[in-house]
Image (cartoon, helix red, strand yellow):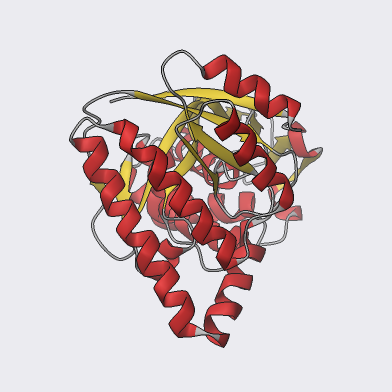
Length: 314
């Protein structure tokens, strides 16, 4: 069998994080400036069924049969072989690398899973359709996040802007007028599983209050889609600010995130908010034409360890 390689982009949530778990819509977009890569190479003299896994980013070099079944890489491979009805994989080496920061809201886990699923299925001679790749990646996401929304695996697999409502068909939509966001990375790891779990506990303790939060976020997200589709992305700025305020009330922001949001606004951003699970990870700002570099500098001065400028277009 020949070698096979695949990759998958990062992602960022524009609107709807946390509320999306409770049936509200969310908007997410791929971030092509960072990505996960996976390659499968045959080992001609290797023993059948022996899969060597190398993931230098996490200092992993081991055999598949030495990983726990609930390890994300093992789960991704098992998802492929189960779907394809394959009981034994030819001897090979799977190498995984990624430029996506871990636990930062950029979809690192989903991107790695999608890249691995595609690479392994291709190596086995049965490339999978996007729908099947996303389905397997969603199962792996449960290991990362407990009760995932499904948005990460969806936007990463299809590599297109998506409007996502849990349990409903995937919707892609047109970006009539391109716009630019600046991503600021706090450098603080924040596993989404923990923040999603904390929000669930708070919702269970005060369902009426949190369902009002979720509904408000859902309304903002719908307005954001309308603004994008009508070619008025400038309207996203105030919506970002409203969304961030609601996330603060849900208890998923942090002093660092709030400081970066304020730095963005002070430097002329049209709006800013945390993105993803919160309490660390990333936040985003909507840039006005020509002030992208000023916002990036403001982020760095406010403590961001890196910034990514992403042009959002079809």
